[in-house]
Length: 453
Image 1 (cartoon, one colour):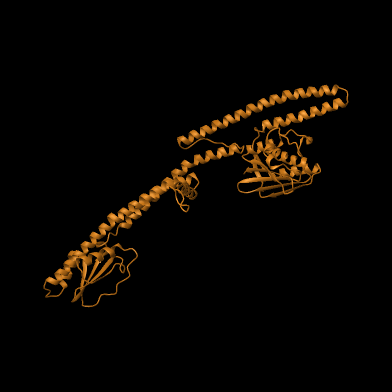
Image 2: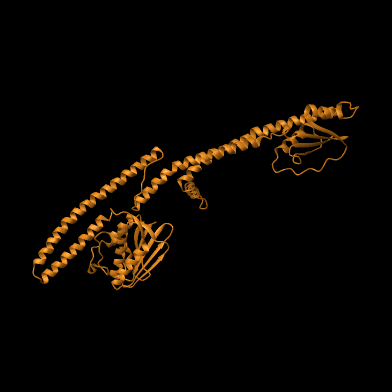
């Protein structure tokens, strides 16, 4: 079946509606849990209130109005059929003592002007209908003037019957008590549900916070609590964290052993070179040994990643000032701009190495350097700009691969092992952040570090 262009297909309409509802609904688990509890309770209370109003309140009010109208109709019949030699005093006494009605027979007169009816008055509606049906005479009623009484006037031809009746005799006035009890019990149940949900959500929030801090390289004391399923997830998280720590410890131990063995061999080379006569060959060999030493340190730093370092509060502004001083000692003019509070909880030496690698790349390929640090409620962002040749957009991801070096303007003639950007991104990601490359306002390359606060 094909639908006109103006009407979307049912599947598309359903998906749009589902997305709209998803956008309106709260995103947090606590809020959604409250909705799961509150919405059924509110619907249940509304249904109960509706059926109470429809089946009980209206039914009782109609029956009371019918009984009151029957009493008034009986008084009218007695007034018309019984000889009243001594007036209406005896009839008024019977109405007061037996029917609890205050009755007066007024001289013939016109009925008062009809009063405006309230917006919602079940008593006006039911009582008026019963008087029309059972008595069928002109009448006037007032259900608003006196809060506890109802006044009724009926035109009898030669007189006007005025009846004052208690409001409770014609109206089920205890409905508000039911509503108050319903609202009160609902409030108590909601308070209990909110307290229970908060206790159930808190362990999940603590688990999410522990996982988030682990992703940022921070370790916090976490002990599982809450429901059985949440505890199982917490114990699984702790076991995963122990496995990661054990793997990193084993890798660090292995790398320490490898570095010790390789450094021992390099030391032998240096001793052998020291015993050789100086000459072009020995100078070339010395350069090779120095380069091997730098490469070895870079490889070990990349593989180790400073995983054993403890996180601490670091003033990133002061750290950038140190990097600026080092850059200016190398004859590169450097500008720094810091906006907002820049104190962060990071691994100090690792994060300094991340920024130093980016600044070092800018020093190697540019003549001017500009560093800008920005902090908002979620992230700390550091931009390192240079005026060098830059990197083509299609190759900016390739330079993050370990041991990858470009063959053009940023080439091997400048030295390096091709690990600087890889180490920087690895450290940023260990803090839950990222390193990105883009166009610099200075015309060269912009390296951006973004880590969550």
